[in-house]
Length: 424
Length: 179
Image (cartoon, rainbow over all chains, first blue to last red; front, side, top):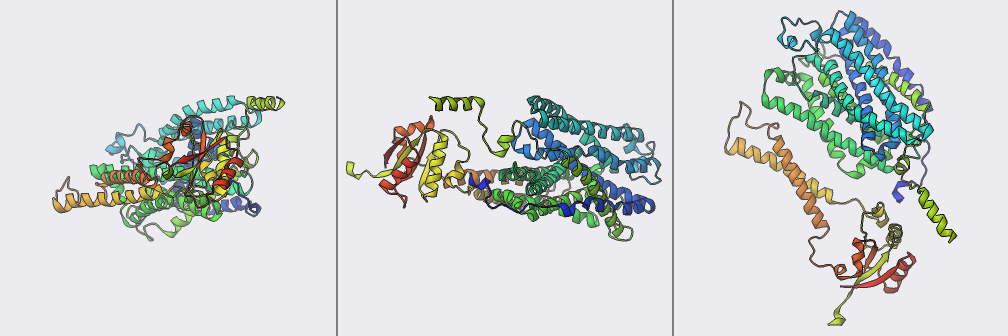
């Protein structure tokens, strides 16, 4: 009772000085352009890594919105609106994907080796050429963004309509969309990650690659959600609806996905290790070379053990939100780990030996990676902020909003009963 | 001998969860330590109203889990690569990989044991006798009544003062429970 109401009012967080940050970040596009012109191959791989990173955030948000409607989860109502906005960034990610598409259509260097391999002489490609040919690649890529555009926007538009009307019909429509959407989501995410990331090594087999990317995506998204909720509580946007227990719940789900991701990635490794078939093992053998070994260790200990052991206690899950710095560390660490994971998947393709400098992974790759992150982050943040500011910050008339706020709204019959009792 | 019977505590009956919760807040604020609330169903917010801290049972699960993790690895290492080494599929005799499912199961098993036995230990269970169970009125705790019981062993307990406190909290019935 008393722990939910904070008596000492905190000073309101003013982010006006940071308003220009997205624009400044987008300036790094100049570095990307230099990279595109002079080192197209390095540009391609680092840009793809950044792209897959941000795709995680939008798809993770889309999943959380769907999850909310599927399970009618009351605790997620306060944070649902900004997740809807992040999910609606998918068409903009489609725009960010254009350089990769154009690059492949007109570029001289293929970042996807199967595009220049000949299926007649390459058996691994020959058996998979139904999926791995340029035409299907383009059609599927465009189709995926179209489907995500429709799904994310329909999930948001009915939610926004409910702000006006307060009609329960919106909730019912959203539930039906979510029920169909979860299947569409599963299939499209798997297709996307197979085409854009897994097909870098088209000879490889892994049936759990889709769910592996999904687990990491939702994990990162939950850390981001935690930070955004902590920030928006302090700026006042979500102050009336976010409570201590909201952070506990986000933290618990984050913790669950820490275990889920580890379980999935371990299972993938374990099956390949046990079966010991060269068609599968080569993927991990390559990733034991040079620096990729260290990145792998970083993922084991930093992506799993550290968050697992430090978030075991229930009070930690709540108390991190008390400090904006701690929330930032949590989200920053999750971003770093997820980016390391994306790098682990993509960068060993151009640098199979895992050496640093010279022929290997160099400073310029690092600069390009950071620039790609900064450019895409700035661009997406700009769109997100524009959307967030022009709509109410949380679902205003969701049937479960009062419950999420921890207040009890009396039913009309109860009010009548009380009035009758006082008359008598 | 009838005179040997001691009073175990003071049982106060309430008719709504809200009344019981407000009474619990009063008892908490008065600084009592040996007391409890019994309700027919879980009342949200009662933990805070009673001033209960997060349960310590988690530590028992953690201890059990860590033991299971260590024992699991030790067991496989002892059996597969020390006591009776066998090469399977050209794999190394010991690796962190292949025993992991077993180690994982051991972790889960022993942390579940830790949780369940830790819970029993913290609740001082099994307990074969409790004075409340022979109180006829107390049956209502499994039906539609809410009870606050303050033990006479509480250092702050005083016959008149505690009665007054519970009456001011709006209790509907009060009686002494015999040990």
